[in-house]
Image (cartoon, rainbow over all chains, first blue to last red; front, side, top):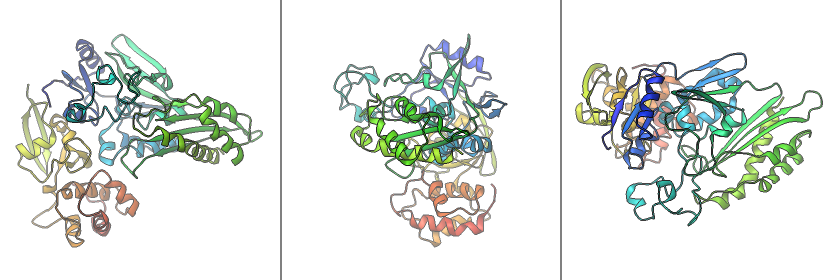
Length: 327
Length: 159
């Protein structure tokens, strides 16, 4: 690895100051499970690394009457094992348990997972491999090697975004001049080369998840090539609320990950479900609507047509599971 | 600029002055001569660099040495005690779960971390616990059998 300046700030304020001073040339170190591999193969070369792990109070899961607050430095393994998360947000436990391997989950953090860079088979490669291809848009070049022109189509590939969006999560982002609070669905830009809205000098501090209403059923389905370790090929997270009075669906959130560039709410399907009793025929009709949603299946991993072929089935599975749980 | 770190490796207190660039893997192999922990992919994907840090399995090739400050590290060399192999090591030998041996240190430590946390794992739980440890030789069956056979002998041990 190339040499770098190394800072162990004792406070969030100190970390923010250093980040601003380096004007985008510093990177924060949380779990290191993305940063270090990318530094080793030369995708990233920060001048300075700001280690956040020695700052008190950035990890841990707290709760109040409204919901939970997950510190961004909370390890993914700790998220998975949390009794509170398991009881109130089972899809988040499930998603956490599906991330990579045990070792990675012991090291990686919730914030780091949300801030994972978008992925593309022409980008996440060694320098040797990349030399054979024109410098692409995500690397500051002029072309896209997937589309031969046009915009970058790298895909947000983290596991936690879809379930957190289905749960209605918000993020607290800290900067030297104050914090901002944004809904998670506004964090992702839909752009391949700059996939999320975290500006120079900012640090993602916390993830806030509201307790779900009574009658809510949720589901998370992650489809991968192999049985473990993989990034998701397609991930779906669903939250449905069954009305007490007449047993119909009163609210729906359906988030499809890894089809478009950013996790996408399927509003056509959501609207279709409201006010209906969700028997299997209704759910099948709803799932079929996915190809009417405004989703552009990105081919950054080479399998857009395959995803188009399986997405309806994955959504049906998730809807079925969520509705079963909505009791 | 070098940083001073103090940590416990295999039960013994150690201190070093390290460059921030140094990984824990480099510290263990090059500074301590503990070459049981292997460099495979050098990118966090194969698991052959697995060690236990505060009883949790981590990838030492993507852990900075400075992040091991104040931690307890267990490498494969720290498993046997008083000349006697750990039950997991015995089980791997008895079941033929070692061929070239390159994945073995990391594999055994992942298994140890599992049994310390979950003394009676199912086969599915064993496979999940070792899914971050790649083996090119054995096909994993004998490894899973070895871990399973050790579960009655390890249960809840620490350190």
